[in-house]
Image (tube, rainbow, N blue to C red):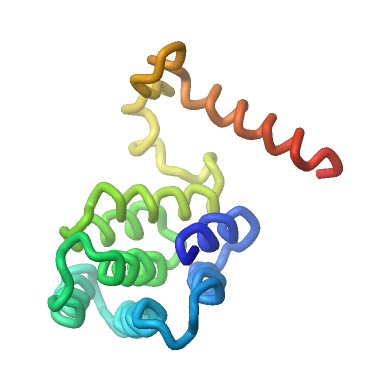
Length: 163
């Protein structure tokens, strides 16, 4: 619920702090997850560089398994806050954390991509993909990424005809 709310919010909200707040609004305020995310946000606000942030996050959440929800969600939130709207800085911070790197990088990337829009994603991230997704799904392997985006938008328009 926390991450789903952040992804949804990122389509209309441009402030990472607000996006994390919206995510937090979908989970119990007194839960361990909410407490851990708030602690990670405080760490992100006061860290001067990525290495310091990751060191402090690791120290704060070392009691969790590397693939536990709380430490990874906390790292995602901290990366969004620390990135301050910078696509590359946010993603690389989440991956530098070293826990569930593929999921954390993808989560931060999807939020940042929705927040910034495709045009704002640096070409160094998009050009190597050659607009191609290898999905391993019959009939969709390979498929242009742009076609996936167009199809998703068409579904959105069908579900929201007045938009």
